[in-house]
Each structure stands twice: as C-alpha cells, then as structure tokens.
Amino acid sequence: MAASGFLMQRGRAMRAQLARRLIWVIWPAFLVAGVAEGIFFTVFDPFDLHFFGAPLELSRMAIYTMGFFGFWGLGIAASALTMFFEHAPSDSNEHRDLPERP
Image 1 (cartoon, rainbow, N blue to C red):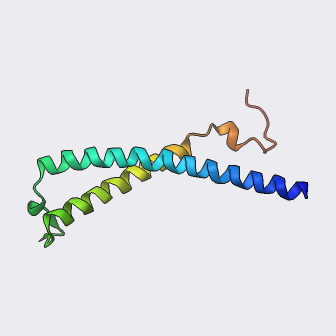
Image 2 (image 1 turned 180 degrees about the horizontal axis):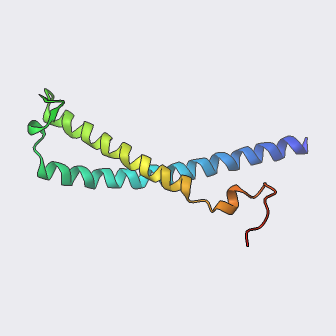
Image 3 (image 1 turned 30 degrees about the vertical axis):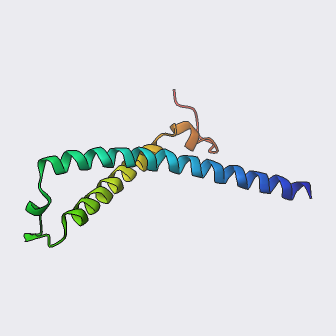
C-alpha cells in the first residue's frame, strides 16, 4: 500500500512540474504576442494585408485576432525551444557510460 501512495505522490509532483513548465512557456509568449501585435498593427493596416496575392476578406477584428494567435504561436515555439535546450549536456548523458573528455 505504501508503494501506491508513493506513486500517486510522484504522479502529482510530475503533473505540478509539467503545469509549471507550461506556464513558463505560455505566459511569456502571451506577453510577447500582445506587444508584437501592437507594434505590427501600428505599422500595417489590417485591410492592406494580402494572403498569397489576394486581399483578406475578413473584419478588422478577425485580422487582429488571427495576428495575435499567430504571434502567440511563434512565442510559444520560441519559449518551448528555450525550455528544450535549457538542459546541460551532462543532464542528458547522465545515464550513459561515456568516457570522460580530456
């Protein structure tokens, strides 16, 4: 019975760590998306944008929304890559029997 309690506690800890990492990725991306959208649409009018040569036939609000989610997606990708590459090589090779480098 003690082993199942340990596994449940470990599962909760892993979910908490996953939630914390998701917040570390999503929240900064949200902030950057807001700033990027503000700067982008200050420079470009939504009705002047074209998609593969055809004008966008959407409302101004729809174009702002698509722009925000596009910038948010780019921010999430950048933050996720940062989280992926944050580990030191020794952490990835910890369980390998590799010879020490000189």
